[in-house]
Length: 431
Image (cartoon, rainbow, N blue to C red):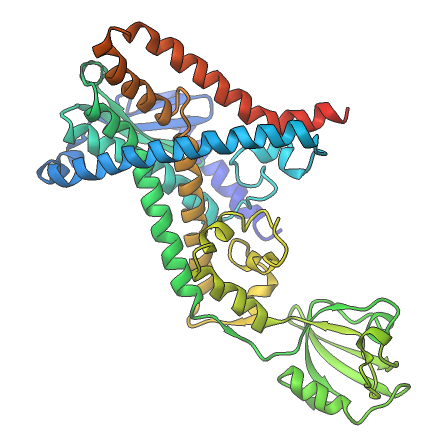
């Protein structure tokens, strides 16, 4: 509960500041309120003009962004169709993924996304990165930016760029498509860069030799002695040990029935337990005649191997599903998104290493997820606006421009339906 006082203090401070501003009508041109949410905006948007000299580069960048959106839109439509088909054919049971709270990218509400500094920072930066992409391409394409700003609810929860509506309505074709695609391009570029940096840093992680106990076998000595889990074995019969090999060497002179005193470090506290060793279970015996403690060790070497495999072509996919822990053999990846005791079982090159890893992971993960979702061909998402501009360009010259809105509405409803199928049908199938 050490976090309670600072959290309450920050909320109270925000409430006092917001109340003073609201009651006294301070900064009316820059600050407005929507319930408890404070919007701070400025019309001083000359920052975006600094990118105009790089017009050629950003137009190429924006065009690549549009191509990325088209590819992701097509891929996601294919995956949605296949998911719908599989759901209808297999009639799956509902899982944690379909819980209403897990459909929202809200830290602490979604069971898979912790409410941590890394996640909140990544979420705010992701929104800013997306909106700044729109702002930069607005100026590159000659669209005025009226204002930009932040949304606050104690902490920043969003950012926005407000283009001039008249300029936006007068812009058509590729310039408008590039503007809508720029936010997605920014998200995907930053997301991929974060994952690359993450993989490079994880290559510096080394296995720890420490004899870390992460589990005990039921009805065997460690279980009967109530050995704390997780814990690190520090002494065996008052003899210091620093590795599993040293523990095994001391056990080599024991036989079933011998007593053994273990001193372990459990969350910073030294705990002593006396075990009466047993015979090895048949499935592990393999001719072993020494005493058996019944402990499971943390396999840091295997963890480091799994982390090293992230540099492979499928590594990006493993990172994207790391918070979900749905693929057997990838459970060791939880050290990347989550702050857990397991982080201390690995050797890292510098202090604050895991804090940096968590920030890079969530910044990469949220950027990629936001980019993919916004690429879906449905309004009001950026992918829907790009689809509409593309259809206008394709059909208006053929005298079929009147069908564009009907097609967009139909596609948007189809995408929404396919998004809802794997979420709602498992509950309806098993009511």
